[in-house]
Length: 78
Picture 1 (cartoon, helix red, strand yellow):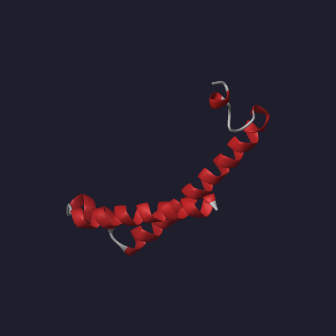
Picture 2 (cartoon, one colour):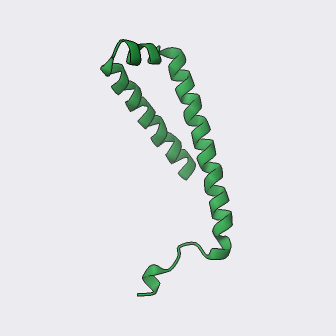
């Protein structure tokens, strides 16, 4: 029973794993923000979704952002 509850990472390596994880999270968020900035330059996202209530554009932008997030996650995971 004790083996099932064992840590995957040893406690002495935990700080290194946490720092590495935070670095990859930061890199992923930066790329995600860049992708959103590029999309907002291409499409008038704020006007179309907020003012014109364009649901179709909201679905398309959401789908694009999910796709970009999957690509970033796969690139970071290796």
